[in-house]
Every structure is written in C-alpha cells, then in structure tokens.
Length: 432
Ligand code: HSE
Image (cartoon, protein in one colour):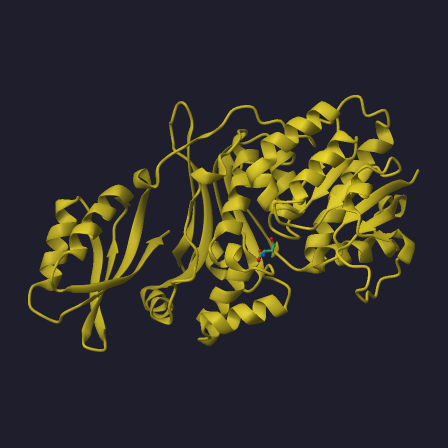
C-alpha cells in the first residue's frame, strides 16, 4: 500500500528528506511505501539536483495541504507563518502532519494538537528537537513509565559549534557564526540560535512531553551566548569548566501542585560532567527520572541528513499505524499528544544555582572586602574569589558563589553595581 506525502519546503532538510525517500534501498521496507506526490517550493526557477519530476513542484502550498490525494503533509518551511496556518489547514483537510518546526510547536502546540485530535490525525515532530537524535518519541513511548525529574540538554547545534570553536581554537564569535551558517547548521537568521530562543522552543516541547502539560513559551527564561567572551572561556578553563548553552527543565522536588523551572542560559559545566564533552554541532539530552535514573541521548543535532532521518522516521511511524488502522477512527495514544492543563513555571528568582561573576574594578584596598560584605548581606555565600589579571587599568576579580537563590544574588549584584570602585560587571554566568 503506498502513502502519498506533500512536502512543504525543499531547503536543507526538505532536500535531505527527499534524498532518503527517493533512495529506499537498504532502509526499512516501509520507506518503499512512501511516495512524494507534491513538493511546495518558493521558486520553480532554482536549479535542483534531485530526481524529482518537475511537474510535482509547485509554489502553491495551499494546494498541497488541501489536495485530497495526499495522506501526510511534511512541513519543513520553518518560521511561524505561513507554517502554522498550513499545518492547521492540512489537519482540517484530514492530513497527518510531520514537522520540524520547533517555533510553531512551542507556541501553538496546544492549538495544533487540539485540532489534530478533533480531526483524528497525527502530528509528529521528532525532527523539531535534537536533529537526528530520537528524543521526542522516547519521551512519549520508551520512557513513558517514568516520573521525570530533570531534562538538561545541549539542544542547539549552532551555539554548541560556536562555543566549541571558541574554546578549542580561540576563534572569535562572529567568525565562527559565519562558518556555522555556511555549514547549514545555523538558521538563515541566526538570532534565534545565538539568542537561545531556538533552545527555549525545544525545552518547552520536551518539558511538555515529559511533564504532560501545556507550556506557556513566554515562561521560559532565556539568555543566549552573544556576550560570551574569550576571557570567560579562558577563566572557565582555569577553574575546571567549559561553557555550554544549556536548556534545563527541572521539577521542583515535592512541589504540589507541580512546579517546573524552565531556563536556557550559558552555563559553566564541570569538565567531568557528561555534557562537558559534547562538542561541535552535536546535541545531547540528559533525562533523569524515576525509576530510570539517568540516560543521555547524544548525536548530530542539526544538518540535512540527521534532521531528515528524524523526519522520515516520523513519516514511517504514521505509515506503520495507517497500515494496521486504515480507517483512522481511533488514534494510537502513544503517538498522539493531548496535554490538557498548563504547567506552573517558577520565577527565575526562585532558582537555586551557583554563579560565576567577573568584575572590573579599581585596584584599591578594600574592594574584595566590600564585595564579600554585600554578598553576605544577601545570604550569598562565596566559594572562591580570585584576582588574576588586569584589563587595561582595571583589576579583574572573578567570584564563584555556592548554590544561592537567584533573587538574592540579583539583589546583591544591583547593590554592588553602585559601589564606586566597581567599573563594570562584564559577565554573570550560572554554574552547573
Ligand atoms: N539551528 C538549529 C540548531 C537547527 O543549530 O540546532 C536544528 O534545530
């Protein structure tokens, strides 16, 4: 039995997906049951090197999502609109949907899932998080017996590539970013990557799956990597850490009703931690739950082939279910999603974490004493204080705190900013 797909987008991932589907030999037998019926593109003029009949290419994407011959719409155009509207239209026309669009799912997942459940179709999104790494379906299926406690991930390949290059080769941020774009890792507009927004979309999706509720995307605290300097990279190295952009979903222990902490920020990760050795465009997601303990998913988090591998796996999942349940009257509960209530997300002020902070200050007596007093007044306990070097005329003091309540730390920092001897606080980075 053949199933027809309509592919929206023939960019990096769309091309990778078509390449797999056009070459089914040696893959799972279900791949042979999938036919590319139509492909929606921006321009018909562009030269392409795929063995696709030209007559199946169209610039009319609406015609694909409403085409009665198509069983599964594969949305790979990215961005919020028209992607969201096309997905919803495909659903109301009875199509199953496979998408890699983390931005749409993180913001409009509840609306899309509700429409899909109503229309009795599947919306699968393995490629939206972790590129080629299977993480969405494992959270829904293989790990479904667990009560989840923590998800800590490096979920953005571009920023991990940039931080790795900065760490290993001392390369500047701007130069590595250009290279990442040329390699097809970064989005055309890299703001979402380097600003941490892409990782925040992904952790919202993972948290929603793991904790079984809707997530208000605006509740995810988010900092990107644009302010990370070579000084911070070098201090991290000296102190026994590497800097990684982490996306964290943490269930506050014993909270009832359940409270989650959701955050994305650059983090000092101890060199001995499993996430410290995830380099280049690779992603890794550490999942902690009961009774599982810890499991880490690791692999290529971006790029044409890996992401297309996840897209095709989703198409196969749907095709597999359709083979056994062609009437489609009931949805497989392991494949479909239907979160009901919103998760309660805590304020960033209530997070307990360690901090690395770099101060530039006048090299006068008493500065370190003043810093210690202000921190102490706000119950911020210090683990180490070092003064190693100078930046121009100013002494550079680096402080690492013990685990402290973030709200207290922020109040201390506000007060420290007003001290005469403090010229600048160039970096504040959380420590895992
Ligand atoms: N720009 C994304 C990344 C692609 O760098 O991880 C995969 O979502």
